[in-house]
Length: 264
Image (cartoon, rainbow, N blue to C red; front, side, top):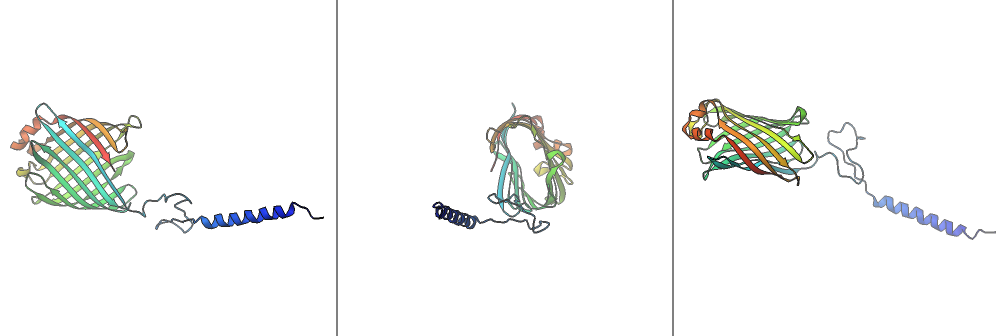
């Protein structure tokens, strides 16, 4: 005697097998693999997830670390310091700009256009051109140096320059983020500039010529737009302190600042 439920069970089984077959065909699993992967079985992504290795794509990133007004009873100025790069994790076109606007004129305008190549996980070798372009005489330099993260996530940039007024120069800059909370961040930074030859028309002297340092406290209510307050100190050093244009600035070296830090 034939079991009456057997045809129904066979039909349900065939329907289930057909559904599984269609689902398997519908899922196209893309295998991502880095060019420098140790072997063919080393996955760099999981099905349904974006590649975890970013070295196969190009990206555009820009940040204004300083976009601020600096105030003192004797003088007030506006300062910016930002950079932007386009490229992959290995090779990038890097643009950096900083300067000050005071009394309707732009001072200390330094702009770098660099090619950057990764030489380790946290360090990039950079080379290109620096232009001193502001209301003073224009200077052009050949630029080379390194940029990256030192121990304990300390951001460091050390650049050397040749050309300009016929001499050489160096700029060393360091920055560190102390996370007081996840959103309240204290950031000290310091920038030192030194030259082998004096250039009075631009207010720089031979030797250690300028220091620009600050202590900024920002609150990242929005990660990409964070207001901050700061105390800054920038002044000419050594021989440059005696140039006429720098004497007044030396008296207003310590200033209070209000600004925004923004990135995209």
